[in-house]
Length: 311
Image (tube, rainbow, N blue to C red; front, side, top):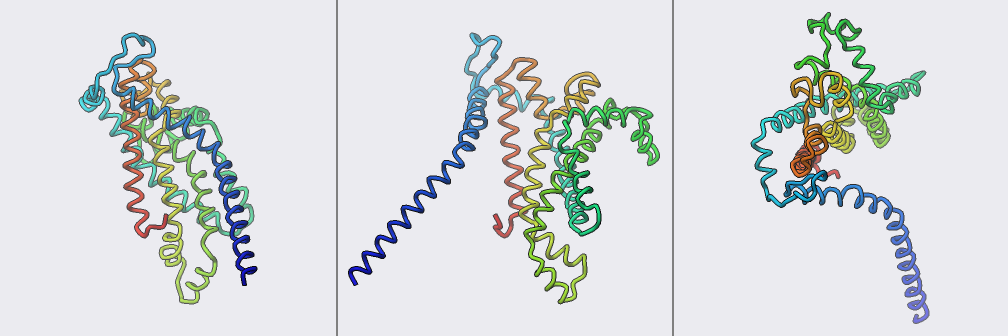
């Protein structure tokens, strides 16, 4: 009896030692990612919060001084900030749902078995790996007055004009370009999500007489909820941090945010203040507001897409 107890105790100690080694190994694997996160996100973010309370310029560091919440007070009295905020929110409110729906439908189509499926998946994914500046340059040729796409949209009643130089069409132009480039990327997310749905669920639904739409509505959509949450969250962050395409278009039409502030967003306004006007404190305050905005939108999205606590 005593011998059996000793054997069990030894086995327990060996098991705990093994678990401890595995835990240490796991932490060692994630350590580089944690270090990178601290170096490239946490420290710069804390530094931005700190600088946002200063009148700060790296050009004249001897004149830097603590001014408390003055940058934030000035920010909420700045009409250009509200234009940038409106453009940022409106852009995200239109492109994120569009990307989510189109990428889901594409994945649904390309999840079926047919000849050339792999080639189509590659074709739809390719735009994502092309540099945004290159995409912007090509789109500018297509949407210039009398360009192929400008003429095409002219058929459905939209005036034949240079989209990126028109105050009403500049943001829709960037939105079309952004959606075209991102849809293939999020399609891959949904294709991965389809692999997590057991085929037996569909088979049971077919036995019960469910048609294609009912299977999509009551099986596919609910079981893809975690994937949808990821797609919406990442697409929102990317849309709020859009910069390259706007910079390319703005440079061709008179400067960042052109024409007449139509393409100004919180990120471009942050860049202008921080690196063109050398107002780092004011720019840092914009960056903090942008972070809080992304955090708030992500929280709201999670409340709507995670009603059953699936995450």
